[in-house]
Length: 268
Image (cartoon, rainbow, N blue to C red; front, side, top):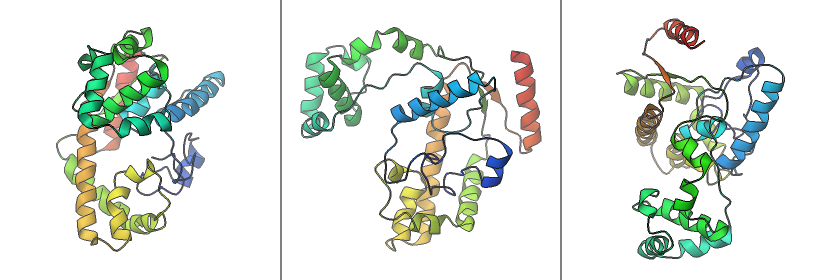
C-alpha cells in the first residue's frame, strides 16, 4: 500500500529523512484513486531490480504482502483481465460459475478453492480470455517452479519471528499512528480511495470514523483486529516458504540485527 501517494502514516512509509539516508524504490507510484494491481507492481519492480543489478548494487526487499514479495523474486505469472468478460461471469450464481468451471476442467478442485467465489470467477475469466484451464496453467514450468519455491533471481531471505507479544505491539503501533495524525490523513482521503487502496488495513476501518459514521473507539478496535488478522495470515503465508532463515524475536533491534548478520555470514 506504500505505492499510493498520501497514504503515509497508516502504511508506515519511510520518512523523508529515511529516504535521504538510503535510496528507496516503489513508493508513491500512483494516486490512491488509481488501482495498482500486483501484475503492474511486478513490472515496475522488475525494472527497479534490473537497474539496481546493472549498477552493481544490492537490493533489499523489505515488508509488503507475501504475494507482492513473491512477484518480485519468483516466476509468478499474472494472466490478463477483461472487464467485459468479468462482468458476464459476475452475473452468474456461485453454483453456476462453479459448475461451468468444473465442466471445462474436471480436475479443477486440485488447483482452485471452489469454496472461494472470487477464485472461481478469476479462473473462469482466465480460461475465457486465454483458453487455458487451471490444470493447464498448473503444468507450466514456471508454475512448477513457483510451487517448488525456486526463485527467478538470486535471493537470500530473512524473516523476523514476531514473538509471543505481537498483539500488544500491534495495539501500541496503531495508537502511535493515531497520535501521528492517521485520522486526519484518512479524512483527507475521503472520496479519493480506489478499489484497492480502499481495502488497506487501518484505512478501511477508519473511513467511517473520518466520515462521522462511527466513534473513534470502535474504529480503533476494528482496525487493530484487522491488523492482527492480517499479521496471522502473513505469518502463515511466509512460514510455508522453506527458503526463509528465521530470526527469533528480541525486543532490542540491535540483537535482531546481530542475528541477521550471523545468518548472512552462514549463508555466504
